[in-house]
Image (cartoon, rainbow, N blue to C red; front, top):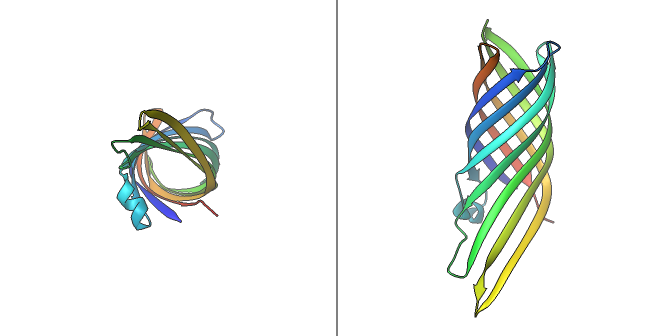
Length: 167
């Protein structure tokens, strides 16, 4: 199991309809935690995500897609390595008003974690280009604050993700 903490996420949320439908976009920093190999080979990386959902009162449901182009330490004189992570999740949330224009939220989600690794290079004059895709399970928990700013909401959150890959 690997855990990634998405540091402070800057979120923008805009209600699409008065019935509680919303769209969120977030930008954050992913910091890897896990086994020694994972922590030594993956550095902090940019995380981008979008969510579409609906709220009814303080509760809501959403679907999300996240993308992280992992900042890896695996390149060598022989090969260039790239790692991309995609998460497709379904989540639930609870929001609690702090002030008339600020809300605390807690969100939990589960879904698919897809990791794609590519490598290319040259060994003894022979070029190679290969890739592998691994599908695993992912869980996420986040909490933060959303502030009403005109017709949109701006916020910040801390999120923890756990992924299980392999046999």
